[in-house]
Length: 390
Picture 1 (cartoon, rainbow, N blue to C red):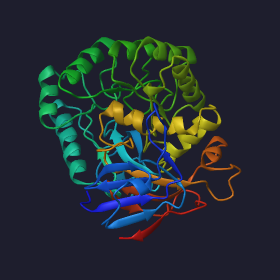
Picture 2: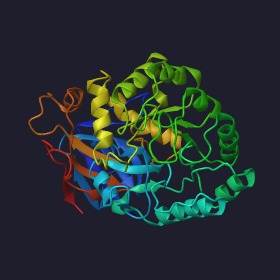
Picture 3: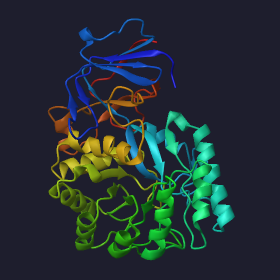
Picture 4: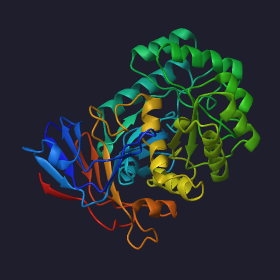
């Protein structure tokens, strides 16, 4: 985290990440000690003595994107695709925070209770100490097994574990068993996610709507399937039958994702929608997966892009109890600066997203530190943010 003062000014469009006011009437953000200190018009803010000044060049600034569903292993390497630096590539796609849904691709992953607890604690510790590219990866998500008892969840929580891996990827696949363990996890402050849909990896299985509702996990993981989705009537049943978060992922069924989004909005519950990639996975590593989800949901789902950006930022931050994801005073200064891609048919940034194009990223900032300049993965932006002094 930077102890320097950072000023980002000449912002043309400021996306807040908050559904209640997705666009802010401001052109400048002041950051001190890695946190947002002030938001407003440049002439009304104290911008003196800033060590770093960024001219956004009239482009768009949004909270750093949050990937609610990743499967890390160790460091910036994934054995699933035998690829290095995948997390840094996601940084180049605007992702500043990731949430583990289980370190399930770990070679030889232990399934005995001592081993699975040790793996979770190790993952939690390692990614607390390591930020590839600066990305914050909240890891240490054990895949629960039938032999676990309440004391195991207490031990995990006391060791710093705050997440469960996808319920259903291990031996616990029945609703009554899952419900008991989810309740134990919740009692000790551990959030839970449940696998939804057909099997994805060896050892996983079908988790249908009845099991999801009975388990009552905090997040309906990849409601659009990872990869195979439930029938649409079961997805509607999930949206209507509980109030838990509805997670839409890149590595799932796009038709089902659109249906789940529309159903949640029909229910007047857009705050439940969060976005992830469910990667690395068999279909690969998707550095632009969250951006592609935003573009797809806007263009095919006909939802205003400033709203869909909230699904990938503020909604997830609130569900996951994170200090980022929203442009608010006191929040972590995690930003992505973007513009319409060169030669897009869209008339401006928002219109280009509505027309299905990806934006061009010119800068990513985490905790007030510039971590990425012109993205190596997005199309080139029409205008680029510039560092005036540092």
